[in-house]
Image 1 (cartoon, rainbow, N blue to C red):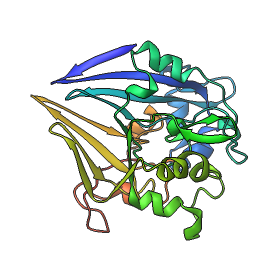
Image 2 (image 1 turned 120 degrees about the vertical axis):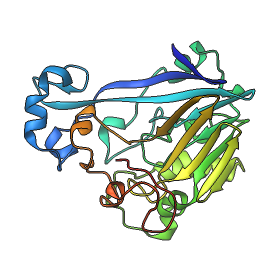
Image 3 (image 1 turned 60 degrees about the vertical axis):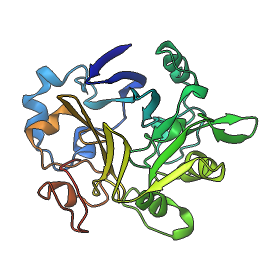
Image 4 (image 1 turned 45 degrees about the horizontal axis):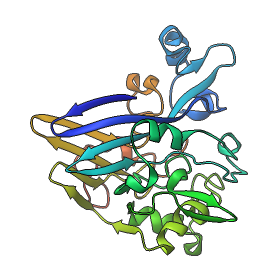
Length: 268
């Protein structure tokens, strides 16, 4: 396990998946000039780009935080055995994520807080696991922090038409609703203080409820933003978004305020 300590908070990266996302750079990042990939091939390959197939590579991972005596997970990846007909690269996975979590010293019952930075398919999957024929919360003692704007946007009963189309199909039903029905969700708006060193703020754009987790402990600072960057190639063109942003203009607005008047940061 890769662990660092910032102030009084320890941070461990727990991997679920690393490899192809079955998308070419032109599809994944339509705003990025082709030259960025051509000129950067020497440092993007092999970790972030397959030079032969010219397909993007990505990491799906969870950040495990230990803060003020609590165990906190930031995003929960894709999950196992999920039907994803319009996102086939994530359909019916069978990874050893929970074993990786155990190797970091954490069993599902140990988790106190789960943070979903937003409710896309690859950020909420391990919210639940299959028990018989039912989806049940993977972390039975945890409070799941979900942005209310995303909860409402992705709830099928509200009839929203996302840019992602059917790419998030089944996600609300198998990875969000079971947790809510179990009474384990806290739906927050605008901002939410987790403890003295950790806070959540709304940063809409990638999704209506996308959020930033800020760590401030001692003299150390860090931010955790789900999908701020999908590839380091974006560092060269910070205004270029992925094809999955619901409001592509919002991430490029100056940091500080969103169009809705809420705090935001530049992200993709």
